[in-house]
Image (tube, rainbow, N blue to C red; front, side, top):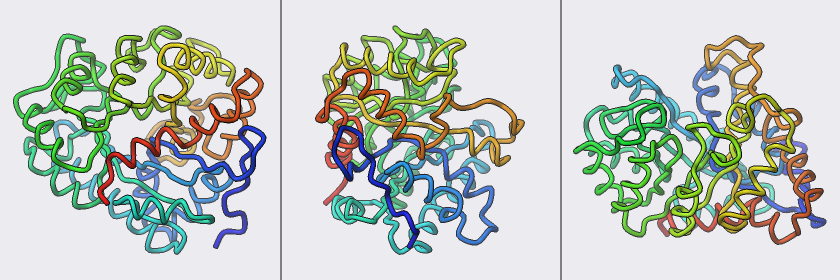
Length: 339
């Protein structure tokens, strides 16, 4: 057991507030260093504990649109690393069900939830989503930024949307315990999935507000309201390129939170850090190690106390901060997970 199991994170004048985060690419780093002994325990678990993150959603990611067999291999390796993290660390729970979630929320435990960021690993076969569901995937986005066989992403024209097999995939997912993640979807895909997915749980695991900073990765007010109408949540993406054109201070991230609170209410905001600096510096992304990838003072999950201090200073109260910290995302997960 680690020496500092989940530091007491004082988000609003109370102790032991647990955090839940809707998006991390940490599995990319674990796959890259899979030859190491216990890479999750050495590279990520201490940072999650230091920041008070008790539930972390971990994405399977591959942008190999033209190489579906490679994308599938990467996804399977990532799923294996999540299972390995749980097997090697007695206090880590692979969360597949509500009972797993309850176990992970016990003091001193950490829960990992598997997600897919882009359906490239499925190739052209919607039926493979059943296999990934059996491996524990409980959240999925149809696209990353580019068009794939199922849907259009944010790098494409807003007018695009789901393909024929994309509609087949959405219909199939409505019968599975998987939440629809609308991050990276272009507007056509975003609204078509909302319309087609009936009353299934929805969210944008990592995004910010287009009204505050006009980036295609951010959501319009119409998109935000549509998510809120489905009782969905928006995960706070803590990366500078979607926050502001040039500034890197946490205060500008809080500006986005203010807009979310005013537009859809605090009950629809969660954490979704997408922290990339450590992954980039490790070499797992294949980008230069000196590439800046973090908001000042908010480089990883270990820095979440600084965000909550900034929110407190902006006037957010205890119940609002607890909702953002975990309650909102846990509500979506409980609606998604099987018993």
